Length: 217
Image (tube, rainbow, N blue to C red; front, side):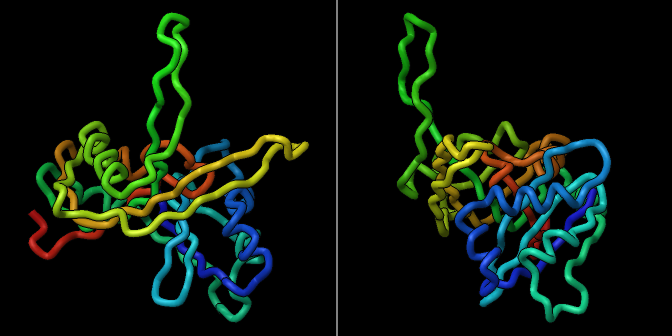
């Protein structure tokens, strides 16, 4: 596994457009892989006054296309990639980590039970319900988060059209969570770091990253 980072040129017109139409980032990322088609995780991270495109992938990517479209031309090294497996090997039950997750917290409204229909999918729009969503989801992904240990720190709404005829309207709410988590099942949690959480992964959601806390265990 690999973790890659590309600094974005926020003044570039292509970048500005892609920040509102995330499928453009997705397409550029996919062009960086030449093996079997796979679903790679990606996310846009702010750091100071800069923006970075982060990518988790099974193959080592060639992000030349993404760098040409969205990168900073002044960067001598357009992107950097490091092996992800050393971090994964340090995941153990009971370990504590600082985390960042951008996800699409949603719920199903009641449907027609008699007809076996599922209800409409809608986003959780308040921080309280967004945080409760993550707390309820966490156990199936191998970790737990306590209410006082994390926050929904930002959100962004997307609405764009996709498809060859641009007829399909996509509406998404991306919420970024930050805080501290505890691993409850190391094997499942490692899969979570590789496969992500929830819906919208093609549009920059679902990627969970962690950094070891000071006390570690």
